[in-house]
Length: 176
Image 1 (tube, helix red, strand yellow):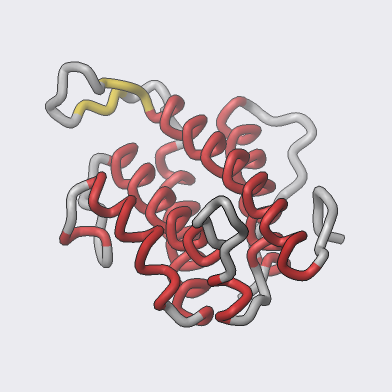
Image 2: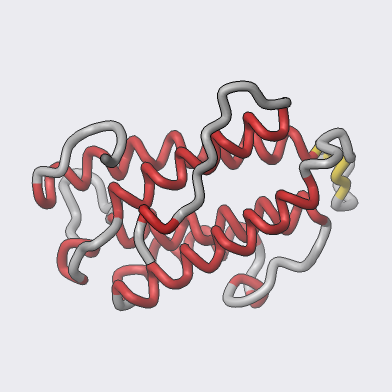
């Protein structure tokens, strides 16, 4: 799979849910374009002074897709994330990604995106649903979680943009 395989329906006049989903889908395509088609050594390359890698970004965003969507749907997170807590998963994703083969990383992320998109189609019917995980300091809505998902993509696509240019010179804001 590659960025061209990710769905993107133009949304010039949509409701709030459709517009937010369009924005997330567009950011997903940009992220996939910036991180896709690389070799293991390119994905694992660090650029000092940071230890961030494109591999780490791909695995982190797999976790973000799975975790945010599971929270919004109030469902279990699923494999491979269901054996650690939230903080340990975040750290594990960044650190373990450099040992993963590109095909594994891309399959993990594209699979997370596919499951997430399908779930958000269901959830978008009511973005006002409150999400309560038993923590009185963390009660929010599906809308907020969808906006947070978009924010994660925007932030990390910026990171991928800089790292990718350093790896092979790929530049630009959008794929073809």
